[in-house]
Image 1 (cartoon, rainbow, N blue to C red):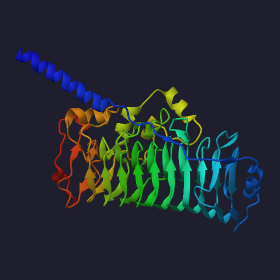
Image 2: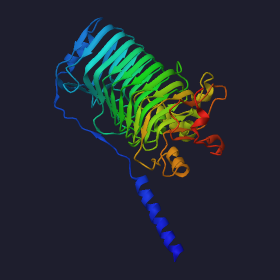
Image 3: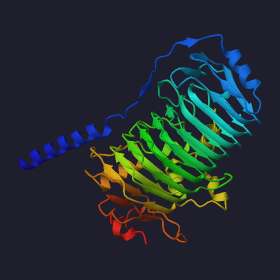
Image 4: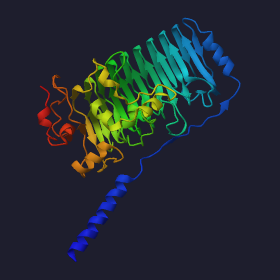
Length: 422
C-alpha cells in the first residue's frame, strides 16, 4: 500500500512539474495605435532622391504608408528627422520594391532621429560602409503578433565605424532588434528592446560598449557573437549597467538562423568571441540562465541540418545569419570563447525550472533540478587561450555550471573558485 501511495505521489509530482515546465512561452503582440495617411509617399521619396551633402530631410507629423525602400548613397552629413517616435511613422507593410525600409550606404556622418520605421519586408533600417551613423529617439518595429515572417533586423548597421544607437526602441525582429555587425567603435546605450528573438546583438565587432539598456521579453536579451567567414572578428566588448529581465519569449527565428539556437529564457549569450566584460548588470527572471557562454562547435552540433536546409535558410529575405559547416574552412576563425570576464552583477530568478524546448534547458532540468543557474558554460575551450572564463572578486556566490559537454558532463563543475581572475 505504501509503495502504491509513493507511486501516486511521484506521478502527481511529475505532472505538476511538467505543467510548470511545459507551459507555453508567451507569443507577444505589438499593437500601437496608428492612423495611416495615404498619398505622401512621392513627396517623401523625393526628399531622399534629392538629398545632397548636409541636407536635412525633415519629415512631417503623420503615419505614412510607403511601398518601396528609401535610399541614401554616397552622401555626407545628412540628417533624417521626424517629429517624434509616435508622431512620424513610416509604415512599409505591403512593400513592393526593395527589402529594407531605409537603406544607407557608402556615407559619412548620418543621423536618423525622432521617427518610427515599421513593417519592412526585410530589415527596417540597414546601414552599410558608413563612417559615423547615429540613431537617436528612433523606434524600429514590426506590428501584430510576433512571427518568423517578420523582418530580421530592426537596426542593422554593418561594416560601419563610429556607431551610436541611443534612446531607441526595437520591437518584433525575427533575428535581432538592435544589431551591429563587423563594425568598429560602437555605443549601444539607453535603449529598449523587447519582443525580439535577440534584443541586442554585437556580432564580429570591435570596441563595443553596451550600457543603460532594457532588454526584456525577448528570447535572449543581449548577445555577443563571433561568426565565421566574415571580414573581421570581434573583441573588446563591455556590457554593463543594463537591465535584462523576463527574456522568456518563444524563439520565432527563421529555420536555420543561428539565433534559432538561442534558448528561450536566456539573459545574455556569448558565442565564440573574445575579450568580453560583464559587470553591474541586473539579470531578473530569465528562466534558463542569466549569462550563457558557448562555442560555435556546440551550436553547430545542436542546430546542424542538411545542405538543402542551409540553402533554404540562406534564401530568405533579409540578411539572416545561418548555421552551416563553413566554419571549419575559415582558418582564421576561432570557434571557442576566450577571455570572458564576469564582474559583479545582480541575479535573481523566481522560476525554478528552465524552458525545456531546447537542449540547454533539458540538461539543466536533469543536472540542476529545482535550481537556477546564473552563469552557464558549455565547457569547451581553446587550450592556447589565457583563460576562457574568469570571475572577479565579489562573485563567489554566483550560481555557476560548467557542463563539460566534450566528456558527457563527466567533469561538470559548479566551483566558481576554479575560475577566479588572476
